[in-house]
Image 1 (cartoon, rainbow, N blue to C red):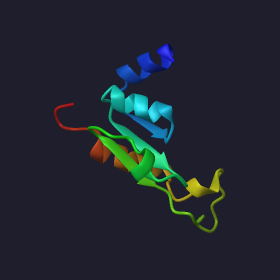
Image 2: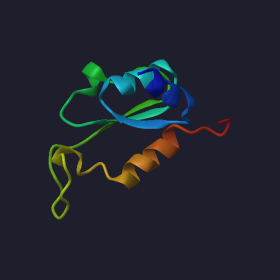
Image 3: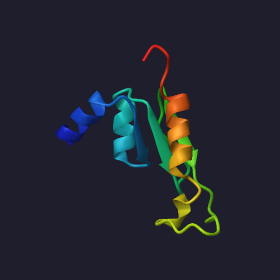
Image 4: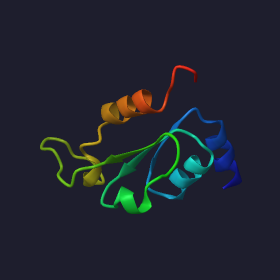
Length: 92
C-alpha cells in the first residue's frame, strides 16, 4: 500500500473503480474519475475535490462485448473526456 500511495500522490489524476484506492486518491486530493457499476455512488462514492463519479447503465449495448458487461457503456472515450474536462484545470 505504501508504494501505491506514492504512485497516487505523484499522479496528475487517476481513473478507478469503487474500491479503497479511489478513497485513497480522494484522501490524497488527486483528481479522480470513479467508475461505478452496480454500486450506488451515493453510498460509497468518492468525496472531495475533483472526485467525479461515472455510473454505468445496467444494459450492454449491442455489438460490444465487455467484461464485466456492466461497464460496456463507459467507453474509453467517455472516461477520457470526463477526466480531461473535469479533472484538469488551466492552473494545473
